[in-house]
Image (tube, rainbow, N blue to C red; front, side):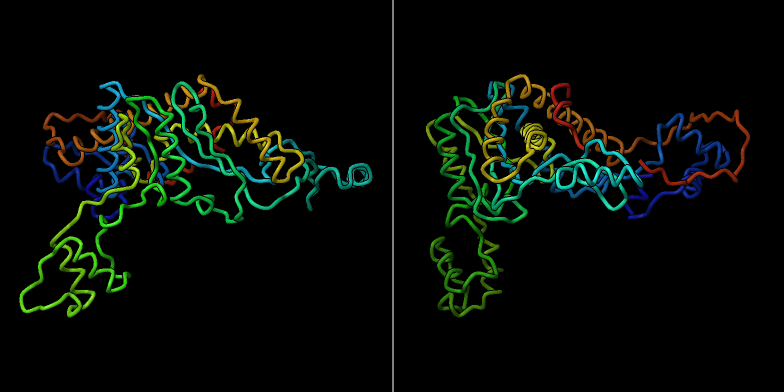
Length: 393
C-alpha cells in the first residue's frame, strides 16, 4: 500500500490484490475475502486522511521533529525542567460559539419579540437565544511561560494591542519580545529548557550570520563578503563587478552558520537552554492547552464586552491557572511526544525497511468470495472545552 502512496497514487482494493497476487506464495483469493482479511487481520481501515499524512510528510519536518524529541529527552534525563512559552489573544467581542437555543414559531415568536427585543438574539429561521457583546478596538495580547509548577511568577506580559489585525503575531515584534525574554531568563531557575515556536520574532538573527539574499541591495551583499573576508574569484578586481546573481551563488561556497538572538541570551552565565518546536507541531507545546482553558473561561464570562472589560477578565482568568492544570496539560503533550516517537520508528521499520514476504502467509477462506461487494466506499468521520482540560490525562 505504501508503494502506491510513494508514487502519489491512492490505493484501491483491486490494485492492491493484484499486486499481492504477483507473489507466488500469496493465497489465491477474491477481493471480498482479501478485503476482510485486510480489515480483520492486518488492521487496515478505509478512513479519512489526516491533514498531515505522515507517509507524505516532508523529510525536513520529520527530521526537525526527531531532533526536538531526542534533545528534549536528553535534557530531561540530565535534570533540565521544560518551560513552555507562547502568545495568544482575547477579543473584546469574544463569546461562546455554542449554547442552548429554542425554535419558536407564530404567536410564540411574536411574544418573544415583544418581551425580549434587544435583549436576546433571534435568527431568520426562528431560533432564539444568545446575546451580543460590545466590541472594541484592539485585542488583549497574552505572553507567558510556565512549567509543571504553574505559570512563572513575574513573567506575565499582558497588554492591549494597538492593531486590529486578525493575526495576533502582528502585535508583537522582536524588540518587545526579546526584552521580555531577557527578563524571563533572570527569573527562570537554573537547568531549565525553554520551549518556543518558530514565529519570526522568536528567530531574529544576529547581524552577520545571515546568508545574502537576492532581495538585498547590492552594496549590502558586498558588505557581507567584506565582513567575512571572502576571497575574490579569478579575473575579478572588485565585488561590485559581479552581478547580484553571481554574488549569491559565490556566497554558497562560504556558508555561515545562522545564529539567533535568543541564543546569545542562552549563552549567558545562567544554565538555560532554548529549544525550538518542530514546524506545525503545536500539540507538543503544553501551553496551547492552557490558552484553550483561559480563552474558554473568558468566552464564558464575557457577557458585556469592550476592550477594558475583557482585559480585566483575562487577568482574572489567568489567576485560575494552577499547577494541577499545568501537570495535566504537560502529560497530554508528553503523550503526543511518545506517539510521534513510536510512529516515526514504526514508519522507519515498516516503510523504509519493509519486512520480506512471508511464505507461510495464511488467509481464512471461511466466507464466500464475491467481487460484487462494495469495498472502496468513503468513510466520513469542537476542540477541548475548558472543563475537559483538567481530566485530559
